[in-house]
Image (tube, rainbow, N blue to C red; front, side):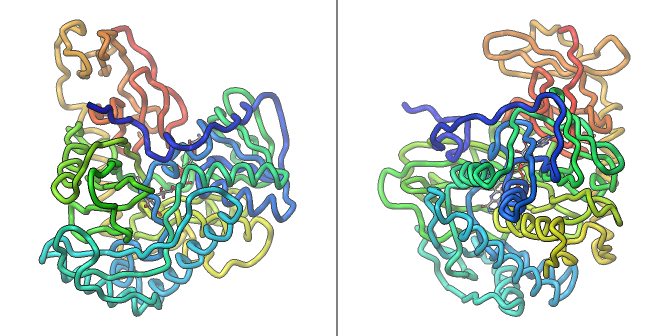
Length: 498
Ligand SMILES: Cc1cc2nc3c(=O)[nH]c(=O)nc-3n(C[C@H](O)[C@H](O)[C@H](O)COP(=O)(O)OP(=O)(O)OC[C@H]3O[C@@H](n4cnc5c(N)ncnc54)[C@H](O)[C@@H]3O)c2cc1C
Ligand code: FES
């Protein structure tokens, strides 16, 4: 029997590379980019190549965020994006998005020249897995065509199971995203930029020049780019407009046959996303709002069942999950953090399509910081107002309000920590009038932490699929010992006595 690696196929198969240093002491830089994912590194590289002094601050390791934990499709055809944009905005917005997304795909192709990242062209498709999904796929085919993408209708994709029609766009890209990100980082330093890893930013001063503080040092910068996937600064009310959604992936090795050539996603809910890398078939899906109740191993089980039902699977080699914020009106948010704050920038809201759109964001921000025009800048301005999306905005905020108070009303368990089953968590009273999260690991060791999220105070819930404490309000995640795994939180949880 083989063991499944609990890490993305991408991070597991990226060759070792030198670590970048931890920030220490005081420094200055013209531009500081917070976050070493595709949005941050693309911005940094384009600025460094223009001769600007740029420093990247990464909490963990570059490319280990969502950008190293996805299904690796770099495509302008993005599920049912164009019909959604027509409905929520207009045909003109959908057409501008198509132009931007296509530019994003080509920018990745251009920057990847010289990076060994297994990039190749492949068709992307959105397909009907059931007859009920057919109308959505037809609508997407029409909307994508009107938006100017050279899509075509395909009755049956080259898949080993029946489908009910698909919209297809050729000449898209699949690559090894972690190798690509590693190459981007090397290109940043080769162009004169600096990168610091293990340097989580705790706060940024309110006025320019900005003072950016990590636990080990401080940087003073004229421009700051917040590319932390969920924006970490509590100004600008991004947390009221972005909802983080978590999804799961498994990579498999097939006993017979080869993975499909097309990069496909089904149009329904649940949606099934299929991708490939060499001999590996990748299946993704099982999305839910970050911090949902009752998340457990079943998410992976369902993906495995889907893969086994349709392919001759020899083994599940890897499994991983990640989350990405989505804006209430479906467009990414790229531009100034606050209206009129021309030196504090943000890139977020890629809604699980950030490999193409994160590259677009990098181009927009690099152009604007360098004082150049960018044709896509106003489309993605974080300060746009979408009246037709107000119901989604209200729903998101009602949910956050309910999550903020709801779990406080649920009485805690009364179990003694030593009676908790191995690899299980319980919510217990902390003796301070609140609740603590207690996890007993596989060796029997008990870890106890405050369940008050250090972002804005919502109560955390246990994620049994990843063994983490996750926040239902804006998606911060913490390890069982309280370490921050994902923001917007920047501070660890308080420890409690078991
Ligand atoms: C399961 C899944 C599958 C996906 N598949 C696809 C796909 O096939 N195609 C596609 O286009 N998109 C896909 N996406 C989405 C895509 O991966 C993301 O949109 C994109 O990678 C986001 O890039 P980013 O730079 O914004 O974030 P990240 O890559 O997460 O980078 C942000 C970085 O900021 C760092 N950071 C956070 N807080 C701090 C702090 N306080 N200080 C310093 N650093 C900090 C993090 O450590 C991280 O490295 C998928 C997403 C998911 C969840
Ligand atoms: S992430 Fe905002 S309160 Fe937890």
